Length: 235
Image (cartoon, rainbow, N blue to C red; front, side, top):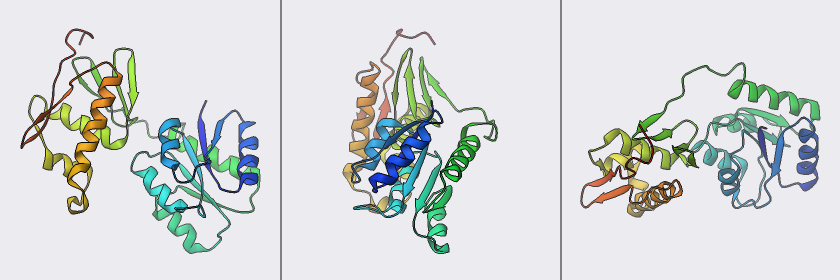
């Protein structure tokens, strides 16, 4: 069942959309904490997002940019703003479509189906999925997933990029500067501790699939993958 996330601060509109879309067999959930939209996104991994522009704390443009750092799932803006500039900004900030309020429910469903077909269905590009393998460990960068045997864990885009670099460089070291450049184009605005935090998160993701001590810190150089899971999984 495909998941649809609704980010709408008007509870009546949000509940109306949830009720209507659910009738068509979709798993629909609402965001109620508008300061932690990405936490809900990470936890549920929706296939499509309906996103309002006027939201508390940060607007929909901001949240769409955050989503785009982690996922290419379709994002449809729903807003009372009807100006051409608002629609242009929605597309330039990573949106795929725009629906103006008030809206007809049938139009919403037609646009949802259209975007889902383009992303996952009959109109989706039929390209082979990339997978990086090493000693039974499998990284799927495009679906943000790491697997070892029957165990799997979801990743953020940054985590997937770090693990991809570690696998590609194995048994060599992935330099700190190389990792920073891979993750953030403009390193001048990245705090030195940011990479350390991401490495810590990567280690925790390895632990979730039963791999301890997966990433070695090489002082003054960078990080290296330690293939320590032995014969647990046959290659």
